[in-house]
Amino acid sequence: MNVEIYDKAQILADAIAASEELAALRETEQAMLADDQAQQIIAEFQEVQNRIRGLQQQGQTLSEADQKAVSTMEESVESHPLIFAYLQAQDKFTEMLDSVNSVLANAIAYGEEASGDGCSTCGSDGCSTCHTQF
Image (cartoon, rainbow, N blue to C red; front, side, top):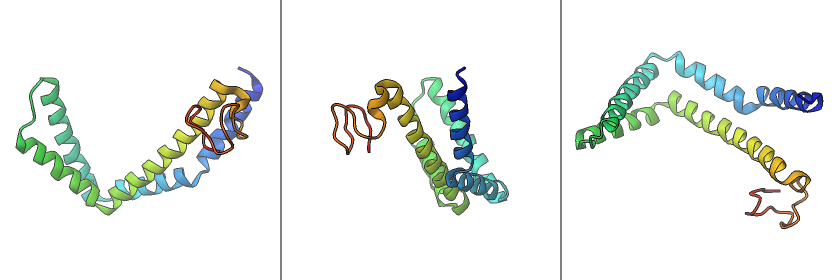
């Protein structure tokens, strides 16, 4: 592996590790894991998910009761403040990683054109062709 690429990847990894998004994700995860009620809700939700997945794999359609059970569990998950905070933190972390992946993909696909100054077919505010926002 090219040493320069490895070094820059390590710098990126360090920046991600030090990011507010990851810190928030870890903090909310620890709070959620320490809460017995949250853990019970998660366990019940996973049980319902597994049952529904099994029915779907067998080609069975979900009954109204099954659909209601899923909906009820989703409401329980979303209404618990610690689980909700964790899910929000997870979404923000995922958005950050998606943005990083987009930068990498654009650089690979378009080379220097995706450097942030606009590409040859785009203006300085980004475009739909290269999916870049500047």
